[in-house]
Length: 302
Image (cartoon, rainbow, N blue to C red; front, side):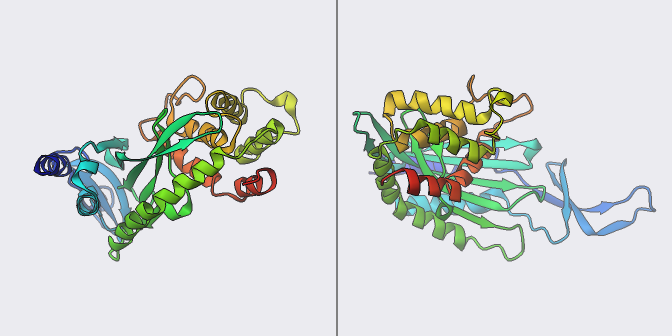
């Protein structure tokens, strides 16, 4: 037991991670107007490198202020053997203005099997997003990952905790969301199994669903040329070959788009490491939308 604990402890106490960088605040001074100090602005830097200018009410919440307590929560909640092979990945873009930290727990896995005999393991994952330019809130995502082809997926509004960069920032909301997401994990896998058992034979309605989700104009087919909707439908057909004709294959087509930089869903030249997470946010919105829920209610007998 001690070996497992020591291995986990070492991973979670690596303070040399690049995401643990300092953020300093400075006054914004005009070099043109007699060195006047802006009363409603301040400048953020890291190691004397410019990050951004934000409002004076903006409160810096450094990554380690959230991640270290969350890691301690994981250590307290899980058996060390569960955390022994935890995968930790950090993504930093825009010179540090946008940060993402991902934790994948391979041993927290449950099996889903389709009537066709296809089997895959669903694991647990957490992602923290933080920014240092005033562009958004601090967000903790908790969700599932399909280990068959690493179809990363964040599901449902209940799996998201947000907090603004303000002096009233409270870590308790993130800790509570972390605990609830673990409690919901088994129910999420049960939902996936129900989707795997739900036959889906009307491909026309599947294409129509993709059109609605991506806001593709289906009334003018002559103008369609490799739209996102068309590529999602092609991915669905590929997923059917492995998973069978069911809702799980439909969901997997969406999560493939959210987790792959490949020929069908290539990241543009101006994209970066965070592009896939932006896609995951979009897919999460699609799967929480009335369009998606109406489709399940009216087309699928679950």
